Length: 95
Image (tube, rainbow, N blue to C red):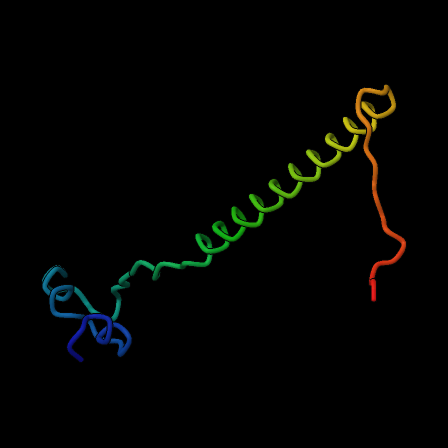
């Protein structure tokens, strides 16, 4: 047991903490509160949420731009300002 973490896991008080206790104190009545180890669950979830949210926003923007462009083409073609034709050949594969 070289590290203080190993001593804590084994139920022993590390020497530097033992030196800070007042003299004459009963070790059976002392409660030592330690800080919990850091959890990375929150930051990882927040990062994933930001990535998914930004992808969703980009998809919505692309969808709205497509609708606006289609509406603009239909309005311009209905008023005679723009003609749009689709040319499809009858024989796709010529032999």
